[in-house]
Structure formats: C-alpha cells, structure tokens
Length: 130
Image 1 (cartoon, rainbow, N blue to C red):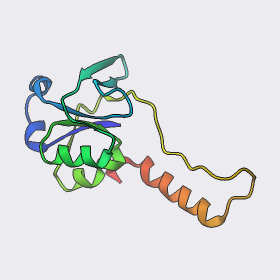
Image 2 (cartoon, helix red, strand yellow):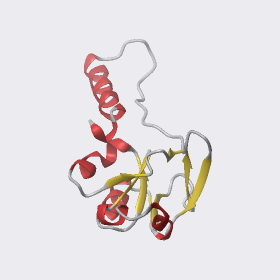
Image 3 (cartoon, one colour):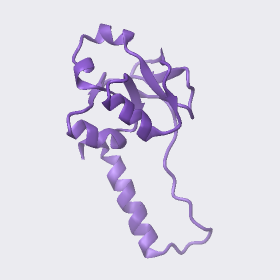
C-alpha cells in the first residue's frame, strides 16, 4: 500500500503535505494512516472522509479530496492516466491485509480456478507500474 494524491497538490513541498486532508478506509483505523519506512513507523491523522469503498476513496482522491493510502494495483490506472501521483515513496502502509482465494477443502482445484488465481496474483504483485 502506498500514498497517492492529486498531481497539483502532490507537486508541493513535502512539508506542505501535513496540511492536506487524508481519506481513509473504514476497515483499519479510521482516525489514522499508519506508515512504515525501513527505519521506523509513524501515524498521520486523517480527515473527515471515511469509506468502506476503496473505489470511492480512489475517486475522491482523483477529484482532489486529499491523500489516500491504497493498494498500488488499485491506483494503477489513475497513476498511468496522470490523475494521481505516488508520494513519499520511502513510506508504505503498515496495515496488514490481503486478498484471499477461498476454495472448498481437498487437493483438487479446477484448472479454471487455478488459472484465475494465478492471473490475479500476477496482476496485483506488479503494483501500478505493470
């Protein structure tokens, strides 16, 4: 997970970003973004926009509502299209989470299921740069 922002806001000095509102997903901790760098972690207070929809938060950021912490693969199209930029690349989201494939018990997995899971796994591992 990385931080993304509307390009015109993101082009400002990094110190100016502390005054920019953050939008946050409801599922983690709606009051803060927890970030991790190679050396330490920090928490950033969020703004008034809280949603359980990643797509809604992404759209809000595209419309200059502030900073979002979202999976790289989800922001990919917006970054490639120039409507969002990644900021503070040395930091990443400290939140744990994931996407899981849930299958019935047993060793046999249908080929089409395996192909689908492999394709999704490959697509999200590359982040937005893919």
